[in-house]
Image (cartoon, rainbow over all chains, first blue to last red; front, top):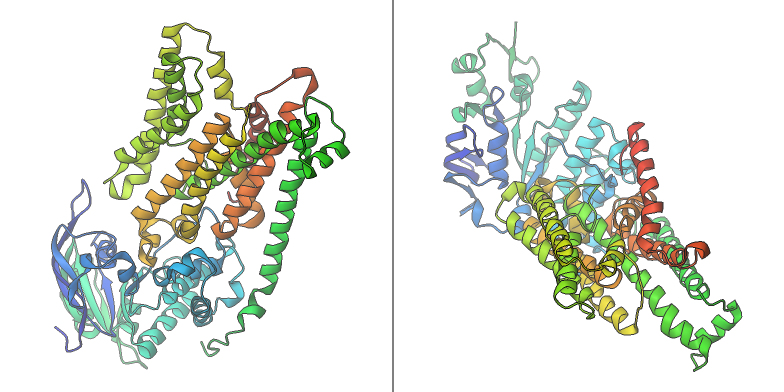
Length: 265
Length: 346
């Protein structure tokens, strides 16, 4: 499918939530190294479930997910956490940890035994500082999670995932609850990560305009199936997309970036 | 994005927090020692402070030295250990179940301990086996809840909670049935269930201390995993916490602490629920700080409560559980009211 090396590949993955309809019905596809992949589709299409399976939080009932050359299920939890980081859609924080503690959680998979019994090693402290700096959350570091605004919370969760120093980043609706300014700010940070650090990003997303502007590749899902896969241009220009959403689109070109934009008249 | 990291030196960055941490340790260790001294000085026999201090420094064979070293000290040290262990176990259960209302007994330890005690009192009355039976009853009950919850994946902790509840109800019913069937005077059991630290010997203190030390040692390498668990099991998993194994270790450690506390002091309520709450407000939710501070605060609280229980003149000896419930209940109501006003729960 792609010239680049496959980082994550799915082979006929089926998944069903206990007592529910099949959430994923035979999804196959490959995520290339250093690409930003958007997973789109109407509500209930299986985007979040797909991300959970890619994160290893859920095991597919049928089929396999491969991370590089091995099945994802064969990785130990620590090993997997050094490859894949997740920015969750929301977290509950009933106990109010500080921002610095939350970002430091990202280092868990790299703790050695002496980090576990004593003070955290200097390399961990430095990595946390780097993640705080990259997301511009250093000024928040002594604040408690409950004192943050929605945008700040998202940046902190991104910092936690960056502290993991993984090649792969999974984002589930990362800009939900954010105003357009903060959403753009978040996406720009991700864009720099893909460009400068060659991170592979998989992002479940609703807004087709944003997806067209930022992402390299798109998977369009419908009722647990992958119906369209390809470059952003190909997928957004495909006639099938209108049927998927049951909507008429108007297709435009962004005047400066020359990327596809969809308008809903 | 332009200001890339300018890492400051570790010493420079940590110093204010470190100083706060040192001050906190100092204050709570001091509080602990004060409570200990208070407990040694007060008792049914009035002994002047000077005589107590002399006896502490020169453990001779005088009557004062015997009272101080063989009666009051083991008792107050046991109170400290029980209080600290219950408070730490409570903090652990609250992180494990991600439930601020969890206490050390929530997955069946109290009912299991009660059943153990009643069975032994019924079969072998008058022997000194009641406390060991309670210890094993508590462990057995928690182990049973845990077995029922295994393999439940995502809902394991909910199943643990519910299984613990169901077992508690069943074990309490069996205990009550046995007590009725024997129709004997069960004041021993009743007194034990109210919780009290009586007749401590250094041997009991040592046994309790060793079991608690084991439980606390298990907690040390898990304390940052507990922080991750507060963010939810999925987040913990994705940052690399072996969630199931951690949960198993936390449960084992909390039940060792609880069972040892039950062994020494019976069922003392509210320490394990209220102390972690208060400490979370004071030092934050980070378990690196919360666990040691909770232990010290729990120890201080129970030493004071026990001294009070011993020295309420018109009432004679009160079970310390009555004191802790009397102090802890209203505080908990205050917490609930505070939450109702729209403040965040801890």
